Image (cartoon, rainbow, N blue to C red):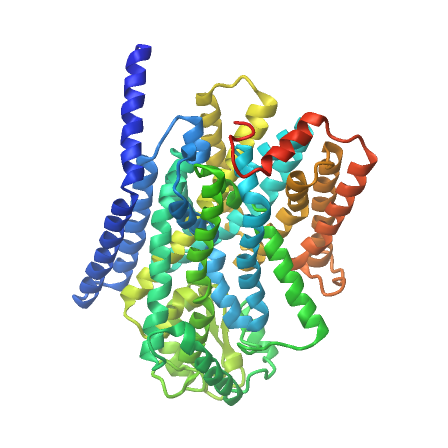
Length: 620
């Protein structure tokens, strides 16, 4: 093919892409109507007698097929499109994609369950995750976009200079992102196991196949447009059951306002059902790792230690949010620094739609179980009747729920109801007696949430390894085609490793997510922030900060979680970033001050990053 012919083809492709960008509203409007139409068809099929199992298969199959189709249509062999979607994503749609990237299986599946099982203390996740975007907007995202990099290690390597700093950033990124991605694959496995009636260990591989179909061929370009589609599904799936339950239970059409009356009702019912009574050891042994409800939904302790633990969890989640590479790389895709700032604002809008709803969902779900006047209320009723319920049998067979008549009185007590908190959202439609089509809708939303985040995480790892390790360190002469082949092979290998680890069930979704945040903030927060805001920060300081912060945090995690050490000042394994971050900061400042200052060119580069206008500082 001649060069002129190639240019003509390239120009035609660019015109098509430009038309797509201009008509995004119409494209996703049609997509949304199509998805709602599919839900209506499923509701009609349910009324016509189609089995729940078949409806579950259709929901999972249809949504995965749509995401895979978007991923295939977005395939590319251009490095700029693969790594940063051509830097042409409008702020509103990048905000939607970021929200989908962010609202992972932890947010959609596990957060409301954490609030349900543990009450007020778990609101720290919600506060920390949302508050972290204030730090992203004010301290990091616009400046990384002005820098013009492809990945977070790309910024670290260029800002501080040398391959060792870049390599250290890659190590932190891989540890944080791989830990996080196992949680997301865990989420897809949970959904697939329930909806397809297959073992969890098989479900993780089903979920992985959909994840790879979305991201493998088109990289960030495919992931971006897939995540916009996934956000639409997940937010519709999350809101509809809550609004439906609020109205059905007599609390009106706006659950965000009426949930406070429902909280009071739940507290009264918890007292009625003797909340806090000791769990029978034999019953707990029979339930295994499943947990009995042990604290109230509004159990806000006034002790100094409780306040300290709440504050430290919020801080770890906030600074972890501002350090996660898969979140920060989303802002590399915008057209300008201004668009990056706007994108953060839109991200918060779309995230808050779900986060402000999670406490209401937890409250109405608990109310549906505890109120003896409701047909759905099973606590305090016949144990045999409770065991005969279809949703109880299905979740019990999946290994996420167990009823144990510990005292043998034939009644189901609150302390005899054992469950895995991460099924609360998925089981809510069945618990509340909603049509099964709503269960399918929620499962599709949970799958979309877990897949969208897994897409971004796998891409962050593969891009860092292919761009920063392979291209920048191992083979700087590699052409674009070879780099993208390496990226895709790594994507496949890392995804398979994540599915294998997730199948081992080493920790729950929220626990794995908290670890990922702490890995990220221990190793990356201060090298990123000081790299932008402190010109004196140098290579030796950044390397010391990354290595020292990550090593100290990881050592503390191992000691507390696996070696039996008592936590220091209430800093348990979910908060080990409170150890790693101070070590990182102190080492970075002390070593930077004790060694030679960066050269004049680097200092000028840092100054230029903070100017909101003008050309990007460098292009990868």
